[in-house]
Image (tube, rainbow, N blue to C red):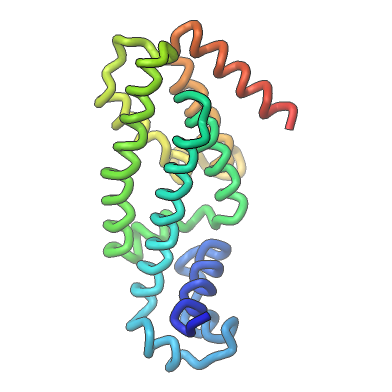
Length: 204
């Protein structure tokens, strides 16, 4: 593995585990057993490493979402698969990461926002249109409005002000919001499927 790749993989691992603000360049260098000077040969500053970390996460989310679409049985199943992915990701992600990103690394945060507002927007919109054609979502829903609604509420799980820990966990927030989102637009046929997938997950 090339030095540049090693640096980025280790930085990504540490940022995800401890948050962006609490990991210094010194700590990254120590974990890699190399000098800070070596890191600076490949990355101008911490911002550049954070951007690289966001690039990894963006690529991962694109691959995961494409995989969900290809593997899912229907539109509702696709959403449950996405929530499963988020729940798994949260096990290895420091909850302060999104706050740190927005406050201390605006360039990387803008990159993430662009991904959210373009790629995730398209994924959600496509899912709603698919669900309507399958008769799982009501035909009278406002697709564009609900796409934007879903986009906003997906990230409530990182909102510590309104959903403070330990009263609420990020996983609990995303699961509850998703349940209400799905039941609110599902047909009777869709509601049966929602209950089926929920029961499957309770048995795990």
